[in-house]
Length: 95
Length: 199
Image (cartoon, rainbow over all chains, first blue to last red; front, side):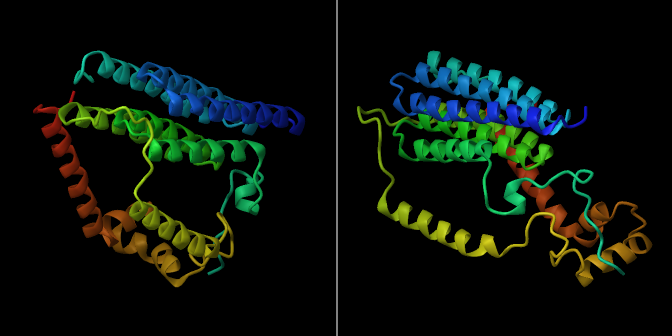
């Protein structure tokens, strides 16, 4: 996978910037809550956003290896959400 | 011996953070996100909320590592910052108490703010003095220490990788200390989990 043309990579990086801006907006939900479930969902959305940003950056820079980071992120995001959700339901049950 | 040229991804362009101090929109957005996460973590009252905010912080900072072309650091940040640390913090507050009152936000104490501001001042004073990332003018490239290792490492240690030679031979005691730290951390995690083996 070679680096795409400047136009394509510019569009990809622009889309990644839009997703990053979206993550900043979702951060308001982490701050505001009001319930812990809202925060868990918000951080899950942020994690999915991160995976998309990583994939877009990998495509824009022509570095397929960065997709591995995105994969690890997807797995960890799932693990994190499950752990926090389980913690809020049965206190102390994390793993 | 001439200075060693540093290969930068097959002649790829430097990111703006390396070339100068101008930011692309993507870097600016991610930096804003990371800063926002840190502030949220600082002012939230509920520790579970703080854990969630710091996990989001980790996710953001690792994207920054990827953009700066350090995917290995990004992987470590993801595994440790977002994964292991979150779990350990959750286990910790499961075994201790969470302050539960009606206030949602709590500003950090003035003393904490002073310490943080002093640290920021130190960073602002020292970081701009560092050479640019990958700069051929960096002192480490043509310093005598680097040349000594490159010339003598194989003869003295018979390790083909110079970095490994420095880590395992020249700085062996330092590496031993690090291994002790990692071992102690592992034992502490097992104690918290009340288990005898991992997995």
